[in-house]
Image (tube, rainbow, N blue to C red; front, side):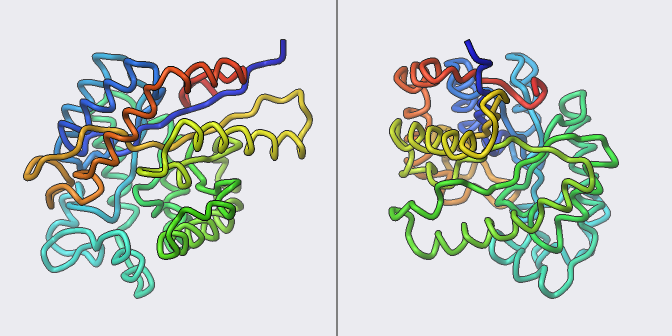
Length: 299
């Protein structure tokens, strides 16, 4: 038959808290995810790295410039990356602060790559951005330079094919997603110029949290593959990354990246993702569509 299409199911925020780690490991062992992304400033990052080694879980870096504490010692004393309490500015706060001109980003990104290497014993095969910060106009060039310097080949470009048809996404969230999409389109040339690659298809915004279901994942994959193969010759293999956030809900004060766990990590939506991803009918769907689960190092 034809070559199988490849699906990387990435569990984001590995290292965030012990219960997130446990949920992600359980998903991996059930064959429900095939890859993880580590927050090196997460409160359970060292434990996460040990688990990845123990269970041979493919692991990359979830670069974080927006939540919690920096890992670069120099920045802890004085940096425009941080608020007066010494924490990153937050998901939206970071975007506001960028418009005023931020510095030291490359030092912090390099420090995170170095810490990843220290924790796992290898460089990350892929590196993306927590809360999609890596595609922001003021970040994308610096991010690309760091990847090129360390020889990190793969990243994520969050342009989701069916996003505009998702009428169940609330307007305020959709505005954020459309901003991410626009930034992503404008990042393509920068990443390409630096020799960085990414899967053919990204899925994960329309299937996040409460919006995840067997049918939302199935239809997102099917319509994206259909759309892509209509444009491209049938002969080539399609590679898809599905971004997911499974876990058992965080219980404060454990978790977070220095400031305790956020609302999403404490909500039932994490468990809902875990329970959906391990459903056998999803696995049989991948088989019926000739889709093989893999990780970035298999590309």
